[in-house]
Length: 125
Image 1 (cartoon, rainbow, N blue to C red):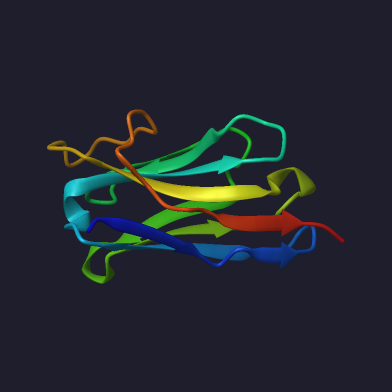
Image 2 (image 1 turned 60 degrees about the vertical axis):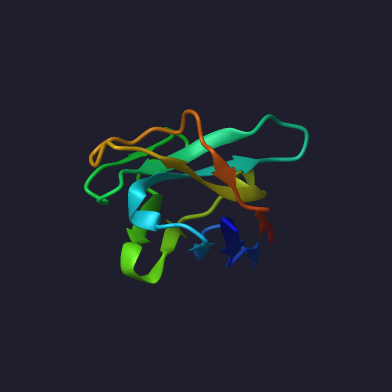
């Protein structure tokens, strides 16, 4: 059974850091491009970042560029989101998502096939 499980969320003060992890099981992670999304209370879900199958290409929403870093470890079947200089407006449930693709060096948040259940990040003093 294909599954994505996020972890690492929690409460952090403004300016702090968190690292989210997303563990994949039931499929070969290296065949998928991956993305992180988030949904804040009362707002629509938005794409935060994406990474290509081989990890050579990443892209970020303007709101997190320079503060968040997405990476992957295909051998460990895990994708990460390092979040630094966190702001109150980063408070949201964060989801990882995957899409099977034949393109090794393509990155997009469009058309994701599989989703995790999410992990809550709260930035507050």
